[in-house]
Length: 101
Image (cartoon, rainbow, N blue to C red; front, side, top):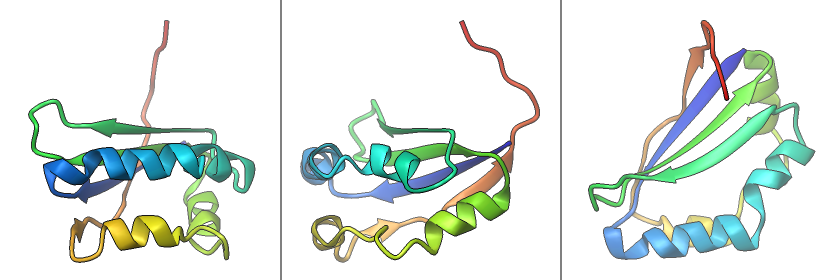
């Protein structure tokens, strides 16, 4: 299992706009429906910095690459909000083990 972690660094006053696009366009659900992703979530730093992380679980690196190559992955509204904003490259991590309640 692979976890992708994408970091976004919008200005703190733009965080709500980014989250609104993710909700309105149902980006997380779209990624699950259109790929082999197992789970996905978006989180906001509690320190007020504006940092956002988008994480997802994938069965393997190839599944994540298929999502990157998906022709409808790009959201123009999100691109406009993040124009000029630092967007980190997604990093992939191999999940060693996990537990849940």
